[in-house]
Length: 149
Image 1 (cartoon, rainbow, N blue to C red):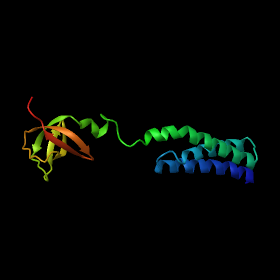
Image 2: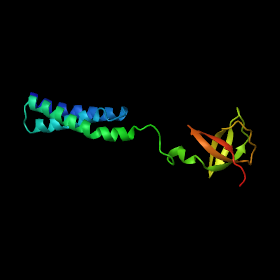
Image 3: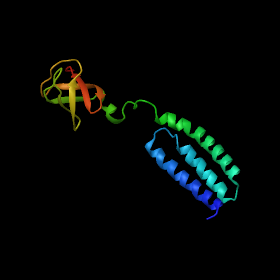
Image 4: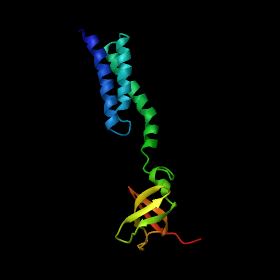
């Protein structure tokens, strides 16, 4: 195999390795370089010498990096917006299924789902008590008794 053929294969292998590694690392850090490697592979296929391939690799990587930064920033924002995931439960009403107290988690039903719950205000709530969700942490909801309206 000639060195030019080796470089063509090497660029594609590098692109595949970088793209696969991006799956394991968040933030679009390696993907731009994988895209740059694809650009260099195309240059190698077109018959460009190694210096041109390296320049194409760097330029395409820089452009891809700049283009993906806004996407990465948007995806890496800290919290979920309200109404998405478990945060959709905030301000929802439910009822106690299993007694809960200050240091004693219990169960509540919210819509058709059962959640492990803790008292947010330190009060004890017996089964049948109407509650309102005020916070969600992981798989646990924090509730307060719902006053009758």
